[in-house]
Amino acid sequence: MCGIIGYCGSRNAAQLLLSGLKQLEYRGYDSAGIAVVHKSNLQLYKKAGKIEILRAIVPDILEGHWGIGHTRWASHGKVNDINAHPHTDCTGKIAICHNGIIENYTSLKKRLDSENHRFISQTDSEVIAHLTESFYEGNLVTAVKSTASLLEGTYGILAIHVDHPNQIVGVRNGSPMIIGLADKEMLIASDVSAVRAHTKQVIYLEDSEIVSMNSNAYEVSNMRNQPINKKIEVISWKLQEVEKGSYPHYMLKEIHEQTESIPRALSGRIDEQQATAVLGGLNMSDTELLSVKRITITAAGTSFYAARVIAYLLETLARIPTTTELSSELRYRNPVVEQGTLYIAVSQSGETIDTLMAVRELQRKGAPVLAISNVVGASIAREAHGGIYIHSGPEIAVASTKAFANQLAAMYLFTLKMARMRHMTWPEGKKFLKHLLNISNQIEEILNNADKIEQLARKYCKAKNFLFLGRGINFPVALEGALKLKEVAYIHAEGYSSAEIKHGPIALINPQTPSIFLVPDDYLYNKILSSMKEVKARNGSIIAISTEGDTQISHIADDIFQIPKTEQNFYPFLTVVPLQLFAYYCALELKCDVDRPRNLAKSVTVE
Image (tube, rainbow, N blue to C red; front, side, top):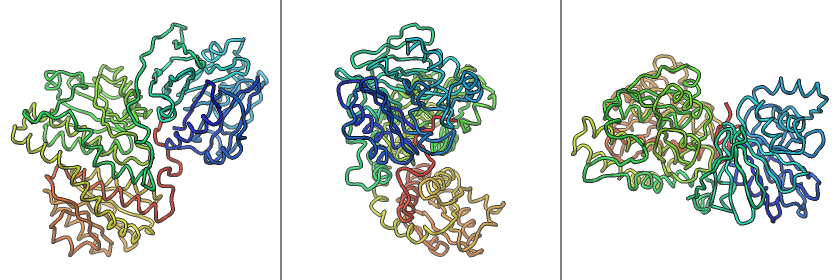
């Protein structure tokens, strides 16, 4: 979660660090700070709150050409200035920034207390600074390595020492870290967004790798002091892709970008002649894919709901038994891995710690794992057997929208490939592709009527509770709609299968609790209508997301938003868009921070 950045070069470090932290805002944070060294003087500035508050206390004339910065998302200790990073040691010569959680910090702190180290914060991270001090004997790299060897948990650490001009030491274990290579200057950060403005050349550190860098060179080694040659990658994202342009918020921009991002996910991956998908990154032969007898998809949050949509699709079209597992549960459940089972890990950032650890646990048991990820070079993508990049482009708003759509697009292609190898005929494959290729045009039709969703948001945004109800392949979309409303508008919402309301949730129905029904013209249409009538009989308010031309729904629903007609398996692409817009406009009406909701982070890299 949080973010780190370091810089060494010839430019003003303070201003560059502040700009880099600004690019990391989307990851979520509650305080920020920088440490810059000038003439053996460690200059430390940190404040609770937004980066603008920190910027206001940093002098414009602050000198220094190397330093580190941090945005904190509180896990240990309250949100205040003292607990903000960077943290220093007793001498005031060492400063560190830390992403992650140190699980054994209590025992380490007791040891350091007995050695008369003075702690001033409530954080787990401060032990890193004091441990580094205790191991320091003139070599900062050695001290950081010795410190890391004692740490249990996840971490991405940057360390500087005033007696080592222009040097930054970084080490990672479970928390992402990249090196940015520029002309006579070096950057290091938790995210490519922090370095994109300065370079396109990056190196991804792996777990248990440590880097020592200055403005002219870097050295990467492992914990056994063995040097490691690293491959230089090129960032493909353009700077303008992370700017809002004419949109007031990133979330709205990214909802609208779905019309561009979905075709990008499909581009170059369709074989029209054979009516199938071409997915070279799977690193599995057709024979290996054909031998798959069962699939388990693991993910968290929005990615988990995308996974549940695909589970329906794979069973319906490819006739492969498919289950979904929350990554956080799968990792600790000692899963039984059977021969013939393929695992798929889904993560927008590719750094979601629960999903990454689930992948490692599965691989320890010999399971093949494919990754569905947006970020090229992310940990999950690198460690998996193969996979599919979703190519949604950078997603800055904390609440995921276009990444959900692109995860679906990528996995719809995977489903097509698996289905064509089994029971799907050539004409059925052609029909599938026809509907898939038309989805972005149909989303554009919905977006052209966004003002109607805005009117519904104004009408209903004062409600304290919502129910989101769907069935079949649209049930996970109802779950995702409820999540979006909770995330950005802070309104309590629950998603259910509409068939399940009579098994308990119907007790919640009253005129002040609106129900949003997803009721496209699929094979469950009449079943959903029956559930709507049950709600209406109890004076519940109903908003219906229905299909163009539906005339029955108007006799039941209080308000209706209609989406274009498509084949029933493709409705999740369309039913989710009004729900994304509804959450956005409700948040707007309630004056919430749409792009950076409270307590949330974009990339969840702590358990």
